[in-house]
Length: 473
Image (tube, rainbow, N blue to C red; front, side, top):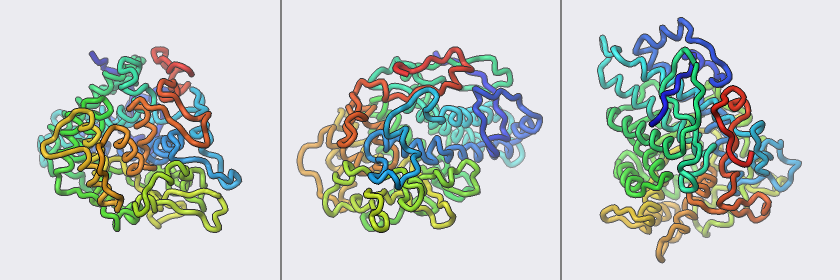
């Protein structure tokens, strides 16, 4: 049984800033109570709860780029005088409780915000507000809560396949003024169960045509396809193969989405609004106080910017001749750095430093999820794993596969397609593979290494005696 955890949260801070809820324990202010008392106030809180996803500890940079660095898709430039030195920790895997990801505080901050919304929806269907309006708010809140728990359990806990009974992260289902409880870590299996429960509930509540109004990017907020796509991923990570395939199929059949063509592929990454393959993304905007600016992905991967995150030759060398994905790299002027650089974060051309959207869910992943699920025993009428992978490869001008499709081939295709989008590290972990990096044998990891799970931040351990640290740290 899952524990109901009571924590404190100040609503106004969702829109203005962030404090770690396990460190700071302020009480709800009167203005926050007023915010929670109206539908418009609750609606604004949900809108604001998307903003912290753009923080540097999350999709604003390091959750994605550090994963690429740890896994070997990315590296520090071969000319080290060319870099600012911000990626050393991820490259060398020198993590400790004092030097680890700060995602913990921001993710629970979002969870706290949406919990407050969900526990204050009752009775707000008055005037022009309908029951469906409230259901849509709850569905968005459930989606964000599920995403936050999911990203944390991937980062701070062993993969499901390695030990589903190992400590995961605390499941937070309720926010309360008293803040008397110190949450223990639920098991990995319990966290996945809660993630899936939240997403299934969200799926049942949301209007299929609902898209939050007033947003610059309709792909940057929850929708029915985004919920279903995240469900497919959660089922894949928890090895529920048939359900992973079924939910991928729901999204693939949605005519609002289509795979980018080879002609489109090089130019879609700097768009202000996600293209026809994007299901959910984090919107880059200078007006968002959580945006990392100089340390955002556009500047971190720019050889004329901070130049901290170059493409590893192990990745660049994998692409077939003619595959458009192999053209998504560049050298710097004069090739001073001695490295190549991804062009998936070109910036929008609107600021210095430039901002970039970060794709979280897109259609090609659904084809890959379904292919992997089929290889592992799932069945979808009229669909084969080979056809799903070739559907992607045809759109990338890559040669079609002709032989049998096994797990290793699907894994490799995911690496080709989803490079620099933050997947490879987690794909290694969840499939119980050892990693191997050609020029960094000391950073290659055995499948059973404790380092697949990052340490819990020391500040959290200091204020919560019920938290236990991961083995090895």
